[in-house]
Each structure stands twice: as C-alpha cells, then as structure tokens.
Amino acid sequence: MFKKILIANRGEIALRIIRACRELGIKTVAVFSEVDEQALFARQADESVCIGPGDSALSYLNIPNVLSAAEITGVDAIHPGYGFLAENAHFAEICESVGMTFIGPTSEHVALLGDKAKARETMLRHGIPVMPGSEGELQNLDHAVQVASELGYPVMVKASAGGGGRGMRVVSREAELGKAILSAQVEARTGFAHDGVYLEKFFPEPRHVEIQVLADEHGHAVHLGERDCSIQRRYQKLVEESPSPVVDDSLRREMGKVALQVVKAVNYRNAGTVEFLLDQNRKFYVMEVNTRIQVEHPVTEMVTGVDLIKEQIRVASGIPLGFRQKDVRLQGHSIECRINAECPETFVPSPGVVSRFRVPGGAGIRVDTALEATSQVHPHYDSLIAKLIAHGQDRADALARAQRALDEFVVEGIKTTIPLQRLILRDPDFQKGGVSTNFLDRLLAGRML
Image (cartoon, rainbow, N blue to C red):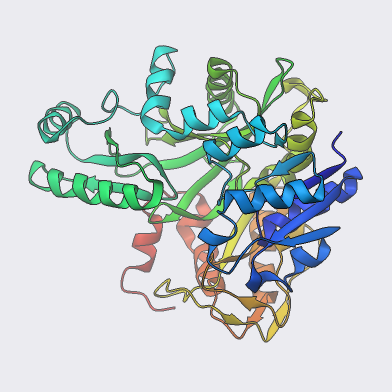
C-alpha cells in the first residue's frame, strides 16, 4: 500500500480522497492555487503545496508544478480526481516514466478511450454495440454528408477528444451540417487541442444510463450496477440515481455483461464508467468510456457499500479486488443532486463569499462538499459546490429524503441551483421515473423559479 499520495485536484473531490486516505492510514499532500490557500481541502491534508495563481492553466493544469510538488514531498502516487488532469494521457505517461503511480488506468488506456473515434473503432472490432455512426473521424464535408444520409437525420456531430458536453452539435438537416461541424471543431480545438469530429445517429428521447466498473491487474473485473443520468442540461448531468427506474434485473445483466466486455477488450485497469444510451425500445448502445472516478460515484457507493476511492487506491497499489461479481448486491435506492453556484433560472455562475452555510442531515443523507461558512466561491473553477446524496429502502423513500434534505439545505451569499433541484424532484414525471434527456428543457419551458 502507498505511504503518501498527492491529490492533483481541489474542492469536494480532493477532500473526499483525503478522507479515504486517512481511513487507509495513508498520508496526503494537497496542491492548491493562491486563491485556495485557506480552502478546507488544503487545510485537511497532512501537507499542502502552492502550485500557482488562481488561473487553473497556471496551477491545477500545470503539469510541471504538480510534479514538482510531488517530488519535493516524496509521494509515491498521485490521485487526479475528476476534471483537470484526470483524463490527460500525457500527464499519466509522465507519472509512469518517473516511477510515480497514477491512480487510474494506464496512459495507453486514457489515450485510447479518450479519443472517442478510436475507442469506437476498437469496440466495433470486438462486436460491442456502439451508437450507429461514422467509422473514424470525418474526412471532409462530402464524407459527412454521405454518412449523415446513410444514418438518417437527425445526427450528432461529436468531438473525438470531447467531454462534458463540449464539441457536440445536433443537426436536423443537411443544410445545417457544415456549420455544425465547423462550430464543433472550433470548440474542440479550444477545449481539447484536437479538432477531429465524427457523426452519430441522434435519438430524440433517450435515457443516459452508465455502468460503473472496477478491474485489477490480476484479471479480475466487476460491475457495480447502473446509474441513471438522464436529467441533464446541455449534456451536463444535474441529478443521478441508482438503480435506474427503468432497468430491471435482466437488462442490468445484459448491460453489465457488455460493460465487462469493454473492460476485457482493452485489458482495462482501475475504476471506469461505460456510458450507454438506452432508447425507448430498451435497446442500448455504448457511447463512451470515462477513465476516471465520476462526480456521481456516491450513488453507487450508497447502494453497494463499496468505497470506490479506496478501491481505486488498492487496485493501483497492486492489491487484487477483494470481491467478485456474485458478491455485488444493490441495496435500496440512492439519488444525487448536484448543487452548483449558479442562478437557477439562467445558469449564470454566481461566485462570491458564502455568508451562511448549513448542510442537511438525518437518516440516509450524505453531503459531499468542501464549502463552509465564509468560503470564497471563485470564478476560476467549475461551479459545483456540493453534492447531496440521499439513500432509502426504495426509490420513494430516497426521493422523500432528498426532498426533505433540499428544504433543509441553506446557502446564503451566493445563488445556487437548490430551487431547481426542488422543482425537478417534485415533478410528477420525475417521480414516476418517466423521463428522458429532454426532460429539463420541457420542465423549464416558460417557467420562472
């Protein structure tokens, strides 16, 4: 087992990793930007090192500074969390080259699965059901027109190196295709330094369901059931739950089998997520594989009892998984609400100083946050400030607890999406589980919170 781990991240995920390390008896090093010097995660680590100014490009994304902090503090592993450098194959490769363990998959896996076009080609070779689309990246507009015609409109333009909803455009007719490709390429070039794009068939009323996987270097792999992430705005997830309201035991076995087929096809190691589109006929397609811990991992932890961060650390240190697929049992139901520092009506970020902060409690309630009263929410970073997770004996129980907890949650001094989360959870369609990825657009049409 590792003796000291550096967390190359900030906020709630950094604090989450610090807590897991403490329970495992592992020392921690936090890196922080100048504006995060007094942040809770930086104070909770055993050691902390400033790696630059508030601009993430000069601090949390600054690979030389992060590695220098690792070297001077003598760590033997780095946990990247999610975002920032978590899916940066170059960073993972450098860690490997200097003999420092990257807590995640290998750099080859990050590179392969991070390039969605190449990942798609790999899965097709192994007979894995993927979204109907182009074989590889688009060569030119004529190629795009031909593929779109074969798929049938609407289609989606997707950046090969994309993520987080960026570099994606829905196209309803041929006249819109060229403009959509150029727009997606510009966004992809800016965000990912690669402007390759490909086409997929667009399904208008799908559900977004993902399977959590764990695999070690000894040939053992398991899946931990599914998370339903259909409540989204511009492909950004807002509410997640496990199990999915529309996935029964038979479908779960089928999707889990395919997820493990993906793992074995590339000899994957550590935690990962296989993301599926589930259509109205219960047919599913692999969309992509995320090679990191997910923001929504707590809902899986709540229903399985598996600490995913600890498992990541154990697997990265060479310890075999301590359980097998037959040992995985889903107990009850869990719902996660992402609380963002944003105006709930316009989604404009709302940085500032938190004047009052009170988290809910009670049976079945978990809040993952690194915020406290007098904390500064900075404009430099993602607006996620807290995750409210509710667990109950069934979906109705979890939903009631989540609603009650949202009513108890107090954040003053900044605007948050708590009112929006209350609206979502009280909506009759959501309560019945009958939603698609278009749910939020319909819910908010003409409505003021």
